[in-house]
Amino acid sequence: MSYKALYRTYRPQDFNEVAGQTHITTTLKNALANDKVAHAYLFSGPRGTGKTSIAKIFAKTINCIHAPTDNPCNVCENCTGIQSGLISDIIEIDAASNNGVDEIREIRDKVKYLPGYVKYKVYIIDEVHMLSIGAFNALLKTLEEPPQHVIFILCTTEPQKIPLTIHSRCQRFDFKAITSIDMIAKLKEIVESEKIDIEDEALSQIAIHAEGGLRDAISLLDQARAYSPEHISVQDVNQISGAVSTEMQLGLAEALMQGNSTKAIELLNSLITEGKEVKKINLNLIEFFRDVLMIKNLRNLDENNNLYKNEKFVQLSKMISNNVTFYILDILNKAANDIKWSSSPKIFLELAFIKISDNEISSDTKIISMIDDLESRVIEIEKIKDDIVKYKEKESENLISEIVNKAEETEDKDILEDVEIEEVIKPIQVEEDKSKEIIEKETTDDIDATYSIDFVENILNNGNREDKALLINSWQKISRAFNNEEEKHLAQILETGRIVASSYNGIIITFPSVSICNRLMVPSNKKQVKNIIRNHYDREIDYIALPETVFEDIANEFRTLWNQNKGGYIKLSKIKNEGLTNVSEEEDSTETKLQPSIVTDAIDLFGDIVEVKK
Image 1 (cartoon, helix red, strand yellow):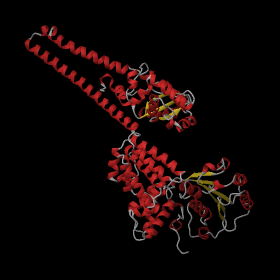
Image 2 (cartoon, helix red, strand yellow; image 1 turned 90 degrees about the horizontal axis):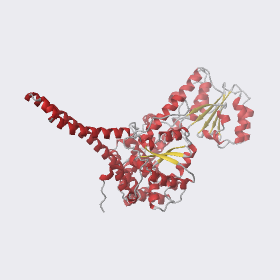
Image 3 (tube, one colour; image 1 turned 135 degrees about the horizontal axis):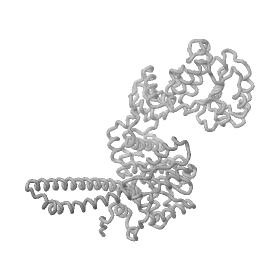
Image 4 (cartoon, helix red, strand yellow; image 1 turned 45 degrees about the vertical axis):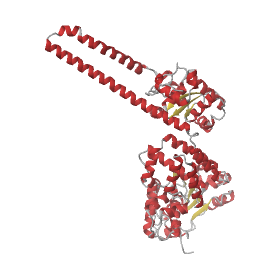
């Protein structure tokens, strides 16, 4: 067989050719140059990121005739012999097929013999996590105190499966996934060297599909060249990788957002006819809506992702809210889990499309969006009110100034001061006093009675991650066990929130809407909600409902103080937010309870000015 695969042809021959692992190559080069080499190394990281390649470069460098040096010369007998595999002192072992005690005992017995050709014997054990417990135990003593002429390099993709006794005897290097920028740069080098005609967008698609593995990317490039030798387009890459094209992703997303499940399922059928896997279609859609969130909420985006440059994608992302996007992602993620274990995966994706398109099911998300819109309008009204007060004050000042000037002209100051000015000032003063009373009431309104920072402090200082994970695991099922419409409605509202902290007896729940927090903290509602939580989790749990932005500020303050104090009980600033109110002494009336949720939310926001027409 004369043809050699691209990933083997372009395997790096020295540390300078390694892509994306500068933090590791720099450390190893310095150690080799200064002749400060450890006896055992553990290389861990995703597949195709250079673990075995760097291990071989290390073996060449330490045995190079010019050692100590920071890079192999690749021309001396030792370097060329190791590269070609002719020197038997560099031993590569696949632990997946040699994972027994006997194989490791054989290594242990042979390490005492001196190398035959070079200065150091180097044992490279790949996929070392596959060794049995007995094999690890057999390796322990040798790994701790090997002969001076032996170096062990253990490579693994799953370091958590390796015993801590092995970890402690090795210098560990964590390999990271190769970034798209580094991957595309390396692919371009290969493309230029091999004179491959390929579109830039196709290179970007290869980098995205490889998911951080450079070897996978080079193999896909090799496969694409075999599929289309003359010219490689992004469609060719999508065809061989099973990925869904950008245009088709946009079409599916648009159909789902418009509630057109018929069109979405038609597009799904056409993709399956083309040979696309249901699992891959679902994954591409999850990535698509993840990119929607990225472009809506973050500034620093991957410049090599052409999707962010697509005008239609940018416009579509502006039309969809965060809440709706999260709702869609939740359904697609659940479908992904169902698809994994199903023999008929298409059914689950079709059901997911119908659920996303169903207006009734997505009504909770629509209500939240409507409430958010109402909140923004209230803030605008408050600003207008402040402007009106300021305008009235300015007009009053101008009027007084005009009267005083007129009095000076008529030289009748005493009469005007006693009569006219007093008559003008009196109503103005009354209005000012009223305004002051309102302002004082608003500024002195202490929401701590409802939104107690002491309660939050207690939860954060006594946080229980295991309990939080346990609660979250069944949070989305909380509304299923209630037949009472009122309790079921409250439970459905609860499900739109997110548990962010737990201390076993108390939890913090965040919501995107301020009005929902106020509503859930009303004593009568809180009593019902605590009853719902108790029935669901079979224990008493108190809670506080906070807007997402408020909790984010609290969490940032807690982290800062924690780092400054290095532990200890953290005291936090009181909770402040324009929309949050003290509802500790308020009760829902019977009439309010019977109103639909959107009406009660409007009443919470606007008070008595809301009029319900039958």
